[in-house]
Image (cartoon, rainbow, N blue to C red; front, side, top):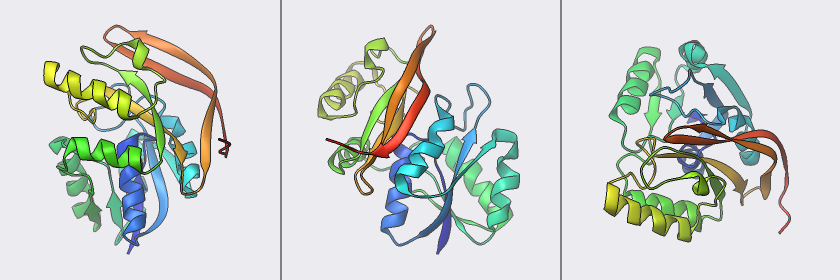
Length: 216
């Protein structure tokens, strides 16, 4: 089965892509949507780095504006569309409706899976990622740039218990950027960055980066 995969550059869309590849799906390319500000549908911070994360996976990427999304995916009639939706009915049902109209199938490998298991699976895969946006009580600027690892996960679990935040950040509590793919041994090195403070929401903006083989 041929497929295309939506890839924001964050951990969920990346995991969905890698699971699809693992099932034998032939992913022809990834699509990164550059959204309107504060989109309910698509990942916003550093969305332009979807191309770099796709490069980590060795797959061609195309970036489109949000209002060009339908025009782009209708080129793939008969394909499967892969997405990393976990809990958002809005995202899932909208993609299902678009896929039905075009004549595509959908594949949501993370849908309604245990959130803690998703995080453990990402960490245990050897993949790496960092937090690039926070927007919830208990998550502050100190989280930005931190690795997604067992230590940061334990803090997310505590915040889930105290404030009810989504452990995977599905409600926009945080956003991530994948920085290393162990299967191709490639990494994204951040060369220049800045913090954008928007009150409750704080974003780490990657201004310059390099993709190259990982050196321990």
